[in-house]
Amino acid sequence: MDFGIKMKRGVRRGSILCLFLAFWGFGCNDNHPNQSHTQTDRPVSPASAFEKDSAYAYVARQVAFGPRTPGSEAHARCADYLYAVLAGYADTVMRQPFEAERWDGQPMQGVNLIASFAPEKARRVLLAAHWDSRPYADRETDPAWRHKPIDGANDGASGVGVLLEVARVLSTHPQAVGVDIVFFDLEDAGRPDFEPYKPGDEATWCKGAQHWATHPHVPGYTAVYGILLDMVGNRQPMFAQEATSYYYAADILDKVWRVAAESGYGAVFVPNRTGGIIDDHLFINRMTGIPMIDIIHKDFGTSTGFFPQWHTLQDNMAQIDPNTLEIVGKTVLETLYRE
Image 1 (cartoon, one colour):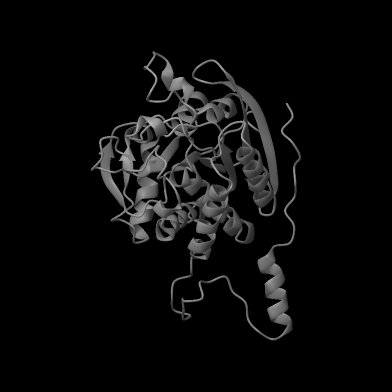
Image 2 (tube, one colour):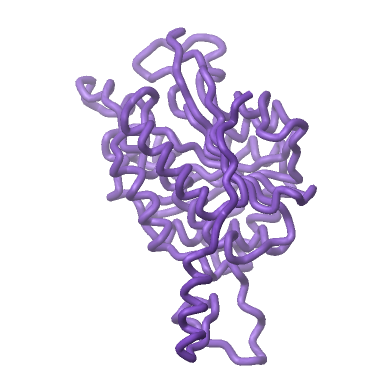
């Protein structure tokens, strides 16, 4: 199978800056500029290098392409952009093109994007998000708008933006485990709400995850666990313990929520248990045996359980809060660096 070209990461911009500053007699460190520490302080975690404005910019750049729906120019251009960004940070990056059948039987062309850090390490962690956006605004109240594609700023781009910033941090702060970041395509092309439900519709979602599960980028690939990010940019974030994650990976769920609490985010990562959802992690758990959790926003005040703008034309940059991206990104990084 043709996975595309592998690329080795080059010299980092941060390294070049450090050399420049050293030449002129200045010090250089990776700590946040607003933080000061004495010798008696605890060591600063590499997770502090996560920059919320950088993550926000990654989200905004995806949305600027337009709806990232299968077969569109925006979809193709965004794939090239994501590949290029990953290639600047990871040890290897590859495309995984595939064909899938849409809910109505029509063929779709998708591409998963896969970046690896320290590919020589046997102990690995899988991080993932979906990078496509919903082709249908099927939650709009006006039927005239329901066939329009959405920006998917929160539902899709937010998780990708966080993981691009995670990739930047990983590139300059080596970790004990190998890490693979997978951006799944065609997650959000499932049967729309304006079409009658049919048995088996569950499988019309998450096509990229299903393909990767049966065609991993490395034969026999496995990871000790996985973390999926979806809808992680909301302005009033709430991350509850989703049932599918708990069923397949309760220990990982507890680990991540404990890290979040110890990092000061206990009011956002709440211990409430919620129902299971159809998301990429469902198929990774079922089809690969890799225990994977889903960090996904939960809204207890809506009928869907998701944020009010979910699957509407209002899922745009107005819904994205850099502080939420930071909370999620630092939690993921802190989890990795504790391995």
